[in-house]
Length: 220
Image (cartoon, rainbow, N blue to C red; front, side):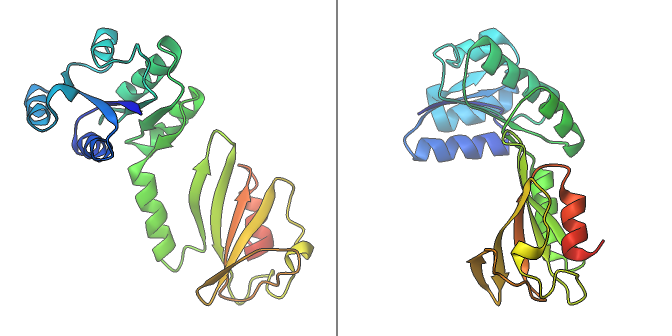
């Protein structure tokens, strides 16, 4: 695989290091001279110094081939949007991954059709919600290109779904329970599965169905 990594900060450098370790062909683009020199000391000819939003810099990195994968990993969301758009629309790169630094900018990436995206802040918040008991519904994963999301719900003793088989829950169209974790053991959620207090339930649903699923499972 040939990959172009734009942004040689800690994230970009670690991704480049991991790809090189797996014997993939990689070029990393970095705008800051000092950081580019440090990367060059480690990665040699794989480093291109320049602004990754400039086409001639991307072409020096080999984007015109085109690469199998472009990763826009700079610390600036606007730059990552520009890089992703250039890669897809100008150079026909089929697989592009973009970093979202500020979760408030996610909608801009969505509007431009840039997917998949990785937002470290959102990932950390999901982990926090998973570990904090008062968060009874956690967003685990958003499959933006498939227009689906996966959530985790913890069933409390007073939830209306307790004692109800999955097939009788009346889940809305566009939603489905995937699995139930009970006493540390996971099982596929089937129609006969009866929900019990303490169950951790995974559900997959279309965006906009969350409030209905929350009401049926949690009563609020």
